[in-house]
Length: 217
Image (cartoon, rainbow, N blue to C red; front, side, top):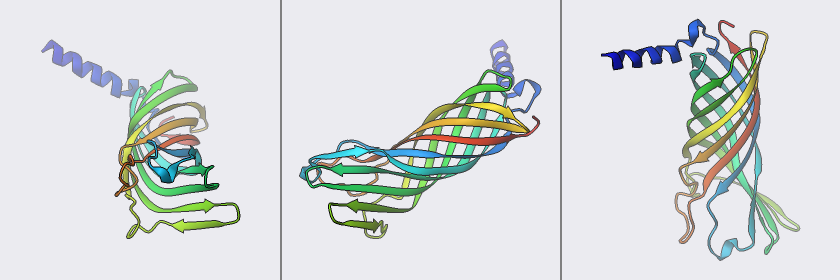
């Protein structure tokens, strides 16, 4: 009985917000993805290839609710992921851009109190590719291919893990924040990879700024 009572007390302490609702709010964030794909290319077609980060937009809205220390933060983002591949043997550069509608679900732990503090977060995301394109540049040519989901072997659905953290400062009725995240996809982009090729997975570092309007601040 004492054990159950202790668990209940700890639960209420963590989620009660010490009598406040300072972590309850809604916000907007905007940032830059520097996406790439991981797992090595295999086969002769990819000899001499080097993968580089590919910049893309990340913008979204989110809610945050819970206690002063532990809170839950779901959201919805427009996120452009992808990669840039530079091939020195055949002298071309190919940049892929994948536009996703992404739903992050994060657990957030706030560190410290007062007007300025930090936080860490971790969770999962689910995403649906709305559109995509590949731009190939050679010595004297440049072509852009739009991804056709009916004929190209691309998976539209992706899910993965998110970890990150940031710092926030009380400004007006809410908090201004700077946020860094790392997203790691679990599902291969190619639904029908060539023999010998490993699955290509999205890996997306993001740096963003934003503002959360806090209820009760």
